[in-house]
Image 1: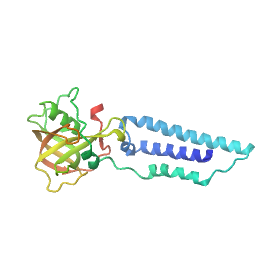
Image 2 (image 1 turned 45 degrees about the horizontal axis):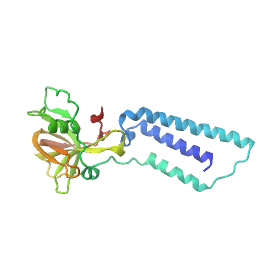
Image 3 (image 1 turned 135 degrees about the horizontal axis):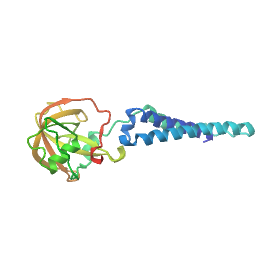
Image 4 (image 1 turned 60 degrees about the vertical axis):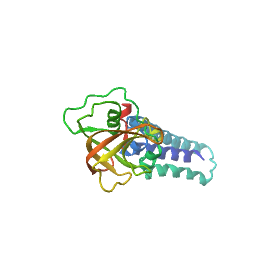
Length: 232
């Protein structure tokens, strides 16, 4: 690959990073806190590409450049795919094949006095499995649906440490007044109360607490489909 082709690839990759970082697309790849680094990397790549093109033009004036095989430009295609095709967030397929990542919390903040209390999947699961702070409280939790091999429904959120590659599911078992049709990967806002039932994840024997549903409604996929609350 000649330097002009290298510059083109760098420019497109930098442009892809800037496009992802200035929209919600980057949330499909990395945690929200990495946005400044993503934008900085995009600026560096675009600047380097422009500098390379300028250098090559000056060199062409005093020398003779040898053409490289045109097939080298095929390396641009993966970068174009990154720009044009947004990958879906990890969903129920990954969730039912991966053990829950729920761990005992280091500490829990006091709950607000009024009900229903809006909690993340991680926060509800942590409190339901390792504390008594939810007894007598009404909660509201949002996540996507997953069904195991036996048809047991779970409300799930993929918890993120750094990027989508290390995302792991945290699961809440659902019981009570569920919709008649449960579609995997559908996002739902569930209102309910603490259920004392706890089971073990068949994948890794992790703890899965339950929520008794009193009402549920479908919601749109959030801009950030991953849960970062466990590492804040």
